[in-house]
Length: 628
Ligand code: BES
Ligand code: ZN
Image (cartoon, rainbow, N blue to C red; front, side, top):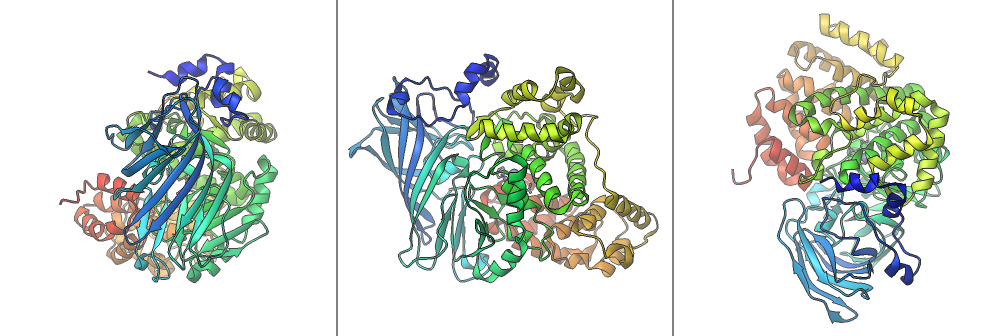
């Protein structure tokens, strides 16, 4: 059953082959090298028989039909006995497959929920390249097609992709496994007045033809394939960083991200050179379902981080950190997702510490810890196994694994190691880890071997309780403490407010950042006297906060305490914003306080604005069915 564990316990030599950079130097090597890829239950591909190495994409974006159509030409590497190559497709209309001008026979297998279908193409061991002509279908889950009203400028439509975890296959026929890397080039035709951008070398200006070409010379897995098309402009931040956004918000975006270059410098100082040349961001329309997505060279970001005071830029540090943890050293399967996200949260906090100081980063760590403790309880109830760092997502949607656990439990596991061995040793270890494994995959077992071999002693392995952290459900007792004096002062205010309605004084709060406010709001009892909340709201206008994190946090105690003045704000927010991290808790606060009818009424209105990944989660949580 656990083929992977077997493979890796077979010894370091074998696992090195398995995880080696899979781009061969010569054709000769192609045929002779014994190929070994890690088993990934979320792909139909059989990379040990035939695996992709390079993609040339030639597509047209048709906004009228809401379709992408074109051709994907793949270079492949075959084993000596190969007679087929298998791709993943999800609701793609395959029109033809050919190689060297000759048609190739192919079949589409049965549909499997979340996975889509295998596209099996007949080849010989000599086949080096093939072209798949296709169109996307109505259920292309990676794509969100926005009408002009859903953009800042309201004049032009917008398209963006979200390929992680296994949605790339809904817009490109691909071998959609994080362990399979390829380089790519692309030619993309879009309507006039629109700019196309990818996770690649990008244009900085629109051109009249509407045809844009792209190149990504570092090999990436397909969950990092990305495309955005819209009326966007570019503004530089530094020599190697900059931001794309709609004209109406570009200035705000440039202001917000002014520290990006400092973050790149800090990250490089910590863990080695940035491997992707440029680091740019694009600010997407508010229906983007995530805070950020680490598409190489071009982070996709929600506009909800444009707070006007740079207070939410830890998200940029996070996506930037993925340029090492995730994009350079990549989780072998979605069961090892904590290797992407836990490392990235750790790295994010370290970048924030470098740029803004320990006081500041300890507040972020404090919020992380509280979120983990709260969410772990809920996950524990629903599916205790999902509180393990090593996930078991076989037969499930990998999206089920996207919880606080890989992120925040992963962070505290690494912090535990740091505190055990000391920062200097841990930093040297991490720098080496990225240098040694760059452009390779990593799985949990191999990481633990590496950790034991090059950093911690067998005694430390036991004292940290490594196996418990990784393989047991729940939060271990040796969860590291966070030390924040700034939060201690907030704690005193929480008590005074909760016990006798004492509103924190202007004197006290004038030095508060967004993070103190978040800590204050998150520390309130989930249900309290609505009059107390009203007094607080009167003093600090929290229901009108322009800071999306503060507003979403404020919705929790207020909705749960039936504080009615907040209801119209909730509705506006849910209709405008599609970021899942805000949606789920807000709808659940209504459901859990006997307002399911209100939740459903708003959802009905807001749903058309949401991306498929947000819709899928909320349909499920709200037991919503389109048919009614
Ligand atoms: N890679 C993730 C987003 C993701 C994960 C998309 C899994 C699809 C499947 C991204 O780096 C991320 O973690 N985003 C967070 C940012 C936050 C932790 C700072 C988000 O969107 O909230
Ligand atoms: Zn992340």
